[in-house]
Image (cartoon, rainbow, N blue to C red; front, side, top):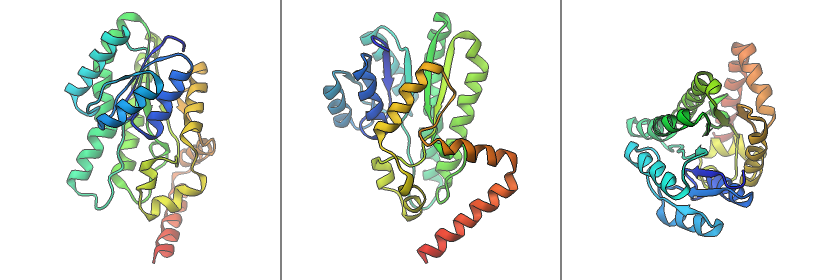
Length: 254
């Protein structure tokens, strides 16, 4: 990791900021990206990195970000596609479009920009923040659940397609994390996630450990692996359990 060139999107706060800080602490050279320019600059100043504010879900913005990293750092060894949104309120068309663009297409745009360089070099690493919602689901927020499933699916496809050519793709899938996104969530999110929520530092620690063994799923909440296995082994039973949880939450809020 010392000397590695790292880009982290959505790094103005939350998990992205913690990843940027942890990578810088072990000697990486970090580009901090966020839609909030002031937040990106503040994190970059704190860690001795480079701020490149912009929209990680816009193809032109991603092209500019990758070009910035190549000029400042000489390349990109690790790209953390971490930016994400959890639209609140009614799941109208605008909410679905925003979730799709940020939670899925941002990864597609990053891969399009990075793969030609990585394949030519025979190495590269992409981290997709997919959330445990990508492995399970997220009651109360259909756009988030569906797009995180799609993000995980894209990460799986990339890993299956390019692993033999030196490209390492990993999916970071935490449950509740104490971030502004969790704090801004609705009552159902709080009821489901607050009790087991971990710190952003815990998530960053898990990610740093996963760089050593290249595991695909990075799970700050280890129990998610068991639930994922149960879901696959007996989907009907798992769905009945999730529906009971939905009913309990509705009764609590009534």
